[in-house]
Amino acid sequence: MHEMALAQSVLEIVEQTAREHGARCVTGVRIEIGALSHVEAEALRFCFDIVMRGSVADGARLDIEATPGAAWCMPCAATVPLARVGEACPHCGSYQLAVTDGGAMRVREIEVAGARERERATLQGEA
Amino acid sequence: MCTTCGCGHTEARIDGKPIRDASATIDSGRTPPGDAATGSEYRYVRVLQGPGSHRHAHDHRARLHHRADGPGHGLRQAGEGGRDATRDTDIGATTQDTATHAARILSVERDLLAKNDAIAGANRRFLADRGVFAVNLVSSPGSGKTTLLVRTIGAWDRRTPIAVVEGDQQTSRDADRVRAAGAPAVQVNTGKGCHLDAQMVANALSQLALADGSLLLIENVGNLVCPAAFDLGEAHKVAILSVTEGDDKPLKYPDMFRAADLLVLNKIDLLPHVEFDLDAAIGYARRVRPGIEVILVSARTGEGFADWIAWLERGVTEAGSRRANTADAPDPRVAATESGVSAAD
Image (spheres, each protein chain N blue to C red):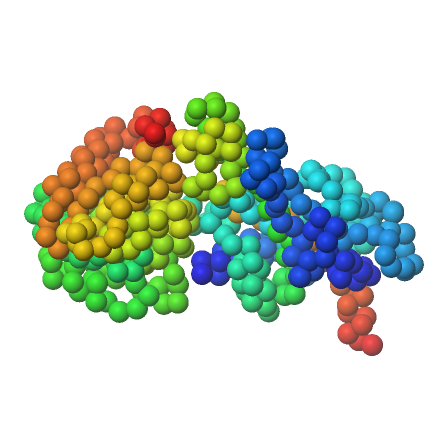
């Protein structure tokens, strides 16, 4: 379950980014996961909620952007789509493929609550 | 969900149909195999957390809040009606959102493994500076990794110094076996962890007094999934598959076999007793990793060890010569990938 380790990486990146921008509350995290990457989206989602608990991103929404895989096919001399490692070229059936895209596991952006939202939260807390 | 009004959280859709988890916003889709020849098999399937099905005080069509694919609802993920969408990079709109809603989108663009890869890079430089050839042995539990190591230490016969990093969840049993075979070993216990990472290996390297020109064998945690993702700074990952396992394992766990540069098929002394199709296994491995080298061994009888030791010797020699002229040496993994693809069937 290396998704737990990856979720920890997400937290480190989120915390560092929030700190750099002086944000105290992260409400959303958007992650790109390539079809050929080493991560199972649902497992990451499960771990994300647990790992974010008690952090600046406690309760943050996780948006996962799934990007397709691609490979260079030698016989076709072209870039072809590849859904999974071990599948053949959809055009010529060859396995002479070098993966070129779809391996990303990347935090693309985070959504942080700004000052106004914090003020409202403070007011609600005092009420 | 919209952070301003809370709307939209029950309206998630994929291709216009409700999905079981409203928070599961984006997925990828592919046309059925029969349509594969028509081109553009892939599409983004974007989820609609869209406007229009509920009422409240603000205007859903307004760009600053409920842009159809804008940050007002989530992180710009919503596609109008589940249509195909290209990535929104309209930072200007994001800034306007800040002013209106006090919620900001911050661009990050950082790889999840960036930290691990940076440490792995430092490990690789550390090893290269000392002319050490390091291999990362990966397999499922029970493939015979430790038996292979013990026999390798004996067969290596102190050609060069040899050292071992042992990864297991618990116990120092494997390191004890390796030390008994005559090689210094550091045991890394990962606890609940399922793989070695670069930091663990960095810690282990600081404890091993590695002599220049050593052979370093890193035995990863027995697991055919997780270790594939983590670069440790090794020269090569070596996948070990035993003939008592299924010959279709390369297809079932492709990430690991794709990450490997050498496949060692172990326990070949048992071939007469098991249903294991050697050619099929090698063929499957070359589907996921074109051109992967294969060596057949039995760690029990020593069969095939001449090939295995010769492969390790070549690596040690190359690491030594690279150390001699590090300035213009190409990345060995890049070279291996290129030759692997051109050598594929």
